Length: 214
Ligand SMILES: O=C(O)c1ccccc1NCC(=O)[C@H](O)[C@H](O)COP(=O)(O)O
Picture 1 (tube, rainbow, N blue to C red):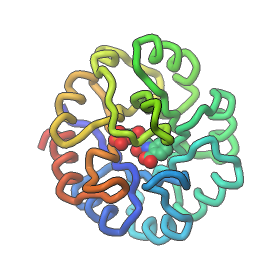
Picture 2 (cartoon, rainbow, N blue to C red):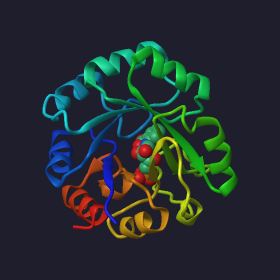
Picture 3 (cartoon, helix red, strand yellow):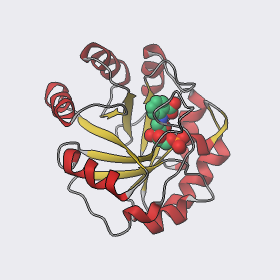
Picture 4 (cartoon, protein in one colour):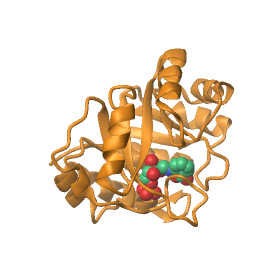
């Protein structure tokens, strides 16, 4: 089974080139200063010049205000806003309306009830649902923790919104993850890094090939 791929935490020219040349469908910029993958506005502006319109540019935010969103949208020419905090369905709808861009809401999953509860609130409100694992208790990051959840929780599920599977994916497990979950999109960060915050070109290529079933 083939699917579309987002490589998250792109913060260098090398990483952007590796992802684009391997066939990534979307690149993620993390606008969250505590993250080891954080990118500055200037950094995003520079990288984005090299990204063709055919590749989605996704900005990741954690409970950001309108000014921060606006600055990042302008700098990174963003197509999609990924809200990775505790943003309410009302805030998702407000951001969509205010900025006229697609919005992706990250949902933390450990049980089927988490999926049901999130779907009842955000399905059809956000353009994309991003199903990610619940962060470990000792992590200061709400995502990008290399933790996966039980992919069978998504088997046979369908949603009004488009959706992505994330959390602990890597070149060795992504084909199984896609087969089991039926995900139309996958999103990865840690599993294609050599050290925290530094992407590995070989792992990016291997991941994309495995996800797309080349
Ligand atoms: O990557 C971060 O540092 C980050 C910080 C704050 C919120 C979310 C963050 N990352 C999200 C992602 O990279 C992905 O959407 C997803 O969580 C997958 O991460 P990983 O398990 O590392 O592949």
